[in-house]
Amino acid sequence: MYERSSVAELTESLRSELNRYPVGGKLPSSRALVERYRVSPVTVSRALAQLAAEGLVVTRPGAGVFRAAPRTAPAPGDTSWQEVALSAEGAGDVVPRSVDASGVLACLAAPPPSVIALNSGYLHASVQPERAMAAALARAGRRPGAWDRPPMEGLPELRDWFAREIGGAVVAADVLVTAGGQSALTTALRALAPPGAPILVESPTYPGLLAIARASGCRPVPVPVDAEGVRPELLAAAFEATGARVFVCQPLFQNPTGAVLAPGRRAEVLRIARAAGAFVVEDDYARALAHDDCGPLPATLAADDHDGVVVHVRSLTKATSPSLRVGALAARGPVVDRLRAVQVVDSFFVPRPLQEAALELVGAPAWPRHLRTVAAELRHRRDVLAGALRRELPGLTVPHLPSGGYQLWARMTEGGDDGSFAAAALRAGVAVAPGRPYFCAEPPGPHVRLSFAGVSGAGELVEAVQRLRTGLADGLGPNA
Image 1 (cartoon, rainbow, N blue to C red):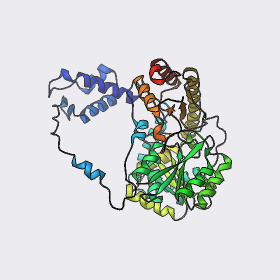
Image 2: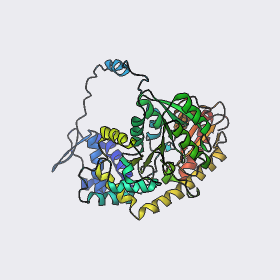
Image 3: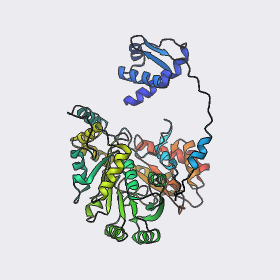
């Protein structure tokens, strides 16, 4: 059993037994709890700390742990004035700045333990390199100066590693270390597009990108994607119609479709952007999530860029843990100074211990072994989920089987409704991501995104599809 699971179970057991003790009553000693529940002292300590954080117990050093008095809820105030303040727009506002995180929360929300999570965008703990990360963090903490302030741009060695991973003429001086991919995208859009400006995005695309654009006061404009990535003729038309100066894309294992930009389209995309005087923000989020049957990976767009058109985004998070929020922005030319300025204003720098740990991790022998394990496991899970859908849910079709990434983009039969599907699936014990938030305009049809990364194994994928088939027949329609 994972330590975190033991902590959660012990916390729940102790929480359910608190009513046995009067307010101020002393709980059993840590040693007694270790013997009673047969867990480690660390597990007991963490469970009691969680109860203390919830205000249920009070820890008194040298005396023990006692049941806390119930918290008294403060009298509610009148916050209705905020509706006016938050909705007020300045005279110069072109596009209202709204913050809609619903599409992101659909992927980040942790479902109850009884629900199978097909909505997660992160690796399950069983696939994460937990031991390697723990060892890297321990080594990093012992490095001389590990807790000093890092350079604003990031540790030189880590910037150099990212530059070599990106390839081409990119060097360490072109790289800024960021707090993950989402932070890098936010910095890029704030640096490249003023409020009110149009931003070209793939359609469908990652909801987090749409949230960033709208929160920045920008207007996302869709450019359709097919099985070979963004369509160049529509990209050129969108640049001409809107005057946009930014195009954000995921050329490798596009989220959510899994498409890879075709070789014949790569140079065309760069040529079109260059002719429009525009930047291409390349979100290379899934390069480390290639499946072991995908063959050689294409180079990054940044590696083929000679004119400073591409602003490249890379992150370690997807291939490791949601808490290892270390990524990179790479660009060439005057735009680097703009990117650096925005990042410094927003967050100063990425904490040095985290950068040191990332550097230790990617330099360890365990790193390539971990990537091979992920490649094999994701391919296996992809095949299991796709096969189960074909057998059990003919009402869902997967037009494209990706060779990388962590999700299947499934289309429902005509007349289906992705919101109703997601709600019915949750009632049956399966969390999925409805497709509507992936479109910034009207979707061409109903879709759902099914992730195979956040479950414990292939068995849970089969169980999830069986739950959808047997428990949701009425909610999913006649072909489910």
